[in-house]
Image 1 (cartoon, helix red, strand yellow):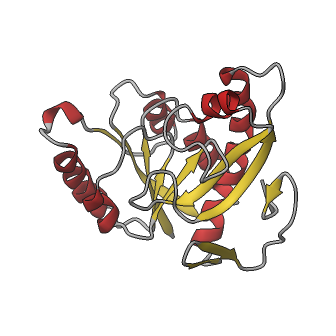
Image 2 (tube, helix red, strand yellow):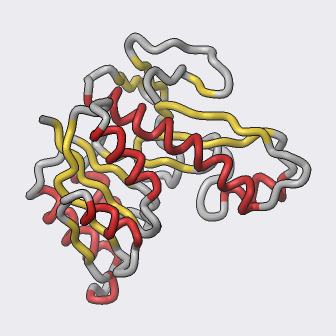
Image 3 (cartoon, helix red, strand yellow):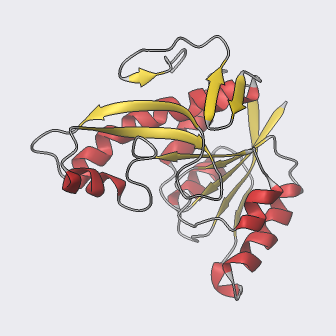
Amino acid sequence: MKNLVVLISGRGSNLKAIIDAIKDGKIRAKISLVLSNKKDAKGLDIAKENGIKTKFIDPSFFETRRGYDIYIAELIKNENPDLVVLAGYMRILSEEFIDTFEGKIVNIHPSLVPAFQGKDAQKQALEYGSLITGCSVHFVTKELDNGPVIIQAAVPVLPEDTPQSLSERILSFEHRIYPQAIKWILEGRVEVKGRKVLVKGAKYGTIPVNPQLEDF
């Protein structure tokens, strides 16, 4: 069975969506470890409630971000993951960590990558005056929030939107496209050619989700 390690920092809503997809048989995998840099991350409770091993590793014990990442990379390597999933993990990964799991790290970002990279992407979209934003699942590279895109969902920006209301509407799509992307990767259907990602058997050209969701 395929194996996932999930990194979190907060409430764990995307983690829960992935766990639910595994329970429903849509993703044929297990999560062997949920690791957090925040002791009070609600996602740790979600993992424990589902019988998943958890670890909190305190970054303050390390002098550098690189040192922290080297340490957690060794923990993750012991799990022999097929995929490392960032689900609301609010730390920028060092080059050493990315090199260790090159091509096996995925992230979800609340914008249509490469637009609005970094923190507060929803606020950035509102301040820019965008009429459309959304969320993207992408492979993690050394350039922040700019790896090859696997799947995106487009979400309209409404005149009355606040960062909170827009975030909540985007989040409902995150919970659909992240499990879908993980399923495709673990089934060996994803091919990366430079910056371009092709999904074998997926239907393209569907709005608001491109390529089309199959099961979520």
